[in-house]
Length: 242
Image 1 (tube, rainbow, N blue to C red):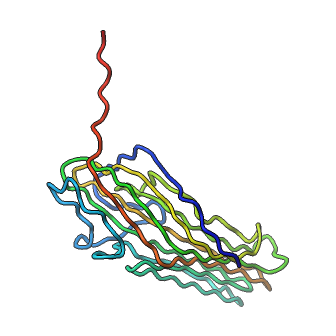
Image 2 (cartoon, rainbow, N blue to C red):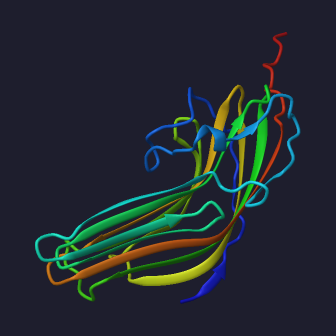
Image 3 (cartoon, helix red, strand yellow):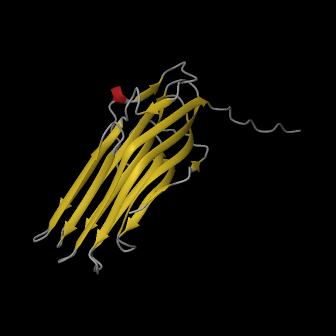
């Protein structure tokens, strides 16, 4: 195992977040946030205070999913958790013909009701631990995969900015690592009632042929997010014709 710190990454783009409603079926399926937990920037709140998570508020996106199929003679196990204070993990283990998958989503949804477009500067920090293992001489049917993505999703769950943090499978190598991550994102949240989902999405899969095993795990801890919102500059006007 090794430990490292990644440099800050800026994902800058003009990101207009638009759609009717704040749910969708993309990027791992629907993100469920009860209406009373959505972080609303209210009308007239043109210079909101920095949003520090966790703090006075906790993360309002924290959900998991998974399934397992042990097969006639195999075994399979899946497990996942995501808490509103900033930790999450997913695990999939399979052996002797079994298969399993698990995933988590953790992050925060903001809804802009200020009446004007807001620029959001987002800083994300977390500790990451992951592992991918398989039988020493895996056959084609044996595979373990681990993935973790950081994204800003629009109101239809479409990624308008994303970064692949982990993309591993056991065909590359059996590996384990722990490291700290820091990332920076920039987006624009358009009114009225447009929402932005700042999200970490982890997914693991384990598939094992007869007589073999495969497992994968992704875990994050100490997730910290800071979001600074300010009025977006006006859109540029076309140059006047002579």
